[in-house]
Image (cartoon, rainbow, N blue to C red; front, side, top):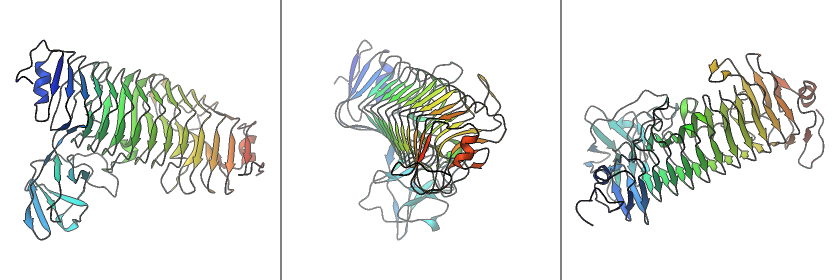
Amino acid sequence: MSAVTPLTAQIVKLAPGTDVAARVAAAPPGTKFVFSPGIYIGQQINPKDGDSFTGEGNVILDGAQPLNFRGSGNVWSAPVGVITIGKIRCMHDHPLCNIQRDLYLDDKPLMPVASSDALSVNTWFYDEANGSAVIGFNPAGHKLEIAVAKTAFNNTGRNVTISHLIVEKYASIPQFGAVGGQGSLGNGQGGAQGWTLTDTEVRFSHGTGIQLSDGATIEHCNIHHNGQKGLGARGANVLVENSEIAFNNYAGYDPGWEAGGTKFARTTNLRVLNNYVHDNVGSGLWTDIDNKNTTYRMNRVEHNAGSGIQHEISYDALIEQNTVRWNGAPPRISLWQAQISVQNSSNVIVRDNIVIVPPDAGNGIVVINQERGMGDLGTRLGANNQIIHNTITFEGRGGASGLMDASGSATNNHFDNNTYILKAGGEHFENRGKKTWEQFRALGNDPNSSLVDLAGKQIKQ
């Protein structure tokens, strides 16, 4: 491999220890970069239009650097410099999610604590006064690293292709991706447009794993164990398919703000197809703020500590042929954390889904309507929605399907041809308050639907 890559080169071979960012800066747009097997430390790449980045064998882009701890007894420390502490809301059991660089013990992030007195083998303390990381165990025989680099790939080029790479341990900030940085710049001002990610694993970064923009395609990727959320995008014609999105929000950001599996905002023609979305701390699949013409099809969404599929303050959508089950976290509150939630959104078709509500958390398929103001296509209402041909199983006596209408303005929401299976009895319907099956139907809901037990026998309430 030559020391200097000619500007006319179209293929650039890379090896561990190479300054990848410098190679990319020196090459023309449309260059193909090929990574040889190994670990590439601290790379922060600014792609150009049409660049491609492909790994051969096991290729890891690692945003962390190793630390050498000194100490004795129960207190060991290493210098890490200044770490930004943000102001975003955290979950009550992770009050320091805002420390925006993670410490990793043997490739797993430790949870930060507020003082050295609270240290354990699973935690660390950021000593802000001395700019040091502090642990409460002997580090001998362990690998300890601190995240340093913010993004592996910034949002500087269009039509970028990334494949067969592992991206891990970046100090990405909330809503910014280790891949894609800020993603879209908003208002049609570019960003990570037309990117394609295939067969790529993104893991253990503090904020978002991947954040992209118009025309993005994400397929056959594994996006897991990121600190805030796995994936986000905004813009037109985004496709996410055949990927696994799991175990995100380890840092403990408040899911009510933005955390969990995904969050898409201001998209048009978003398609989310045939993905496995599970065990995220927050909603699994979430479209929020003026998304139009969304399709969720044939996804398996389960064991997320929030809603399974949540379409919020948005417009036309098709949610079909998904298996959505066992989502939500105790305690169950009203119709929140449903398996499928249509929240202040209109012209949504929810059909042919298999839904299972766990005994102690979550709800079925719901329409929620509140005062949420105006959006791109008018007032954000839970109106003109069809919930049809779904099979909803309630495993316990709690949980419900139906309508919550705090503002009284929800109109023309149509439930029909659904099958409700009750494993343990109970009342499972709401329409501006709790209703029995007969009361729910008397209001015009589910005239051709059935309420049955596990044996398929009709139930009367």
